[in-house]
Length: 338
Image (cartoon, rainbow, N blue to C red; front, side, top):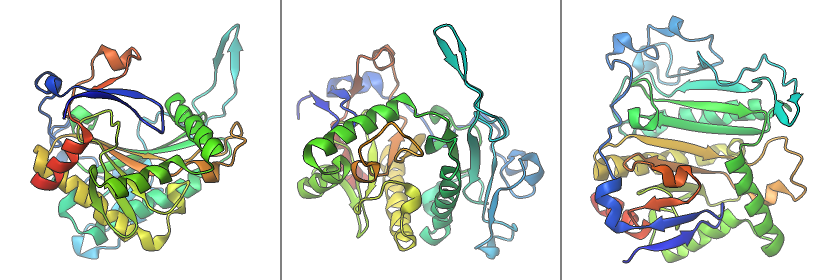
């Protein structure tokens, strides 16, 4: 299949697909390559080193056979981007606006196990991670100061990871990040025109086309998006319409765990365990600028991005993304090799 230019229907971002650029853009990365030593005795997130982190917000011990006293921990980030204790206190200096760093920044240590591939643990054990994301999301979204909640994971040095232990983070912003706001506005416009959720329509089309589908179960679909920014980018989307991750029914979490781990396993096996990022896109929280019903126009989903492609000045300068792998080819490779 020849290269082409495609537009993402959610963000209206244009992506240039250029297969001939693959030797230049792709590079080696590993999820085990981190900035801090990998040994458990040096890892601040391992059992026995709890004193090196902040006071716990949440602890699970659903798997006592691990003999660690806990199976998952949540605590404030040691060097947080934003702080709950701050007041926004907007300030102005001529044309310049500023505010204090109010918000929240929490760390979820996903397992007591050190290192290794996360997809090797059982879905029942990993489900705790999604339950923690749900419970902490619901709590943070109740604070009227916070306008958007982002859940994300950086695994490996190339992806911004700093510790060779599986962890994720939640950040609650006092503003709506511009990239997310752009998505919401395009999604709201789509709903105003068609009276349907754009993400729901994407799921329906991907299930009908099958060409980009990687995994599917009764509750979720995983596919390489039509205009993905990065090679082997995969979205996991609930089939039912849900605005917030925290609204996901309890009975759906095991299905989510299974498809999430299956996708990560395919990426690890097919691509040689690259570093990767995970981002959960939620609907807007406590955001008054959208007069159209946000419950209707947006739909939470997870985006997984293997870090096998460098970023040059073109996307940084706003000229668009270059992806050397067409999504149809990426989906086929993951299904065949993974």
